[in-house]
Image (tube, rainbow, N blue to C red; front, top):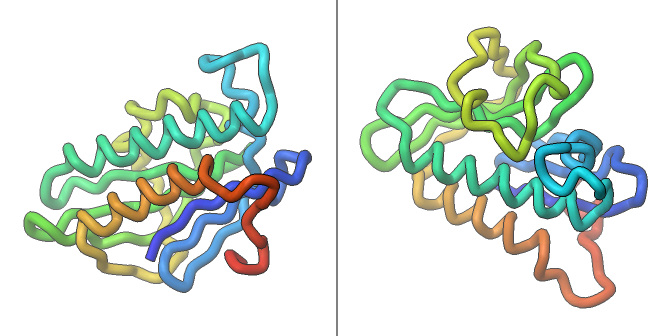
Length: 165
């Protein structure tokens, strides 16, 4: 199971929860809000949702384009000293190996709305999560569900952070 949930708490810190099976990471949305290649005049929750959507759509494109054995890194936690990501390896035509980890590439060194060059460019990836296997179509569907969740919460409701911790 995969989920990315944005919990707007008006701080841009500890407001992004990424889950891969039993592995959960709590991250900051700060670098999504300040991405100056997209709506540079804004730094709010609406922009954060839009930039997250752009990033997740890039993830889907990268997964649909990937080849056997060439890993793809999907960034989600952009921090001052590292970038946390999910490493994906395709096994056969329909299965993925997924593991959370990080790169020493600083989160400020690329724009989350333009991550294309980053997917294959981090040779210092360090896995620190549990290796998972998942059908490729399921992972893509769960990424799409995460995009939809960014916008389709019932009016006035936000996700319960305890549900994703």
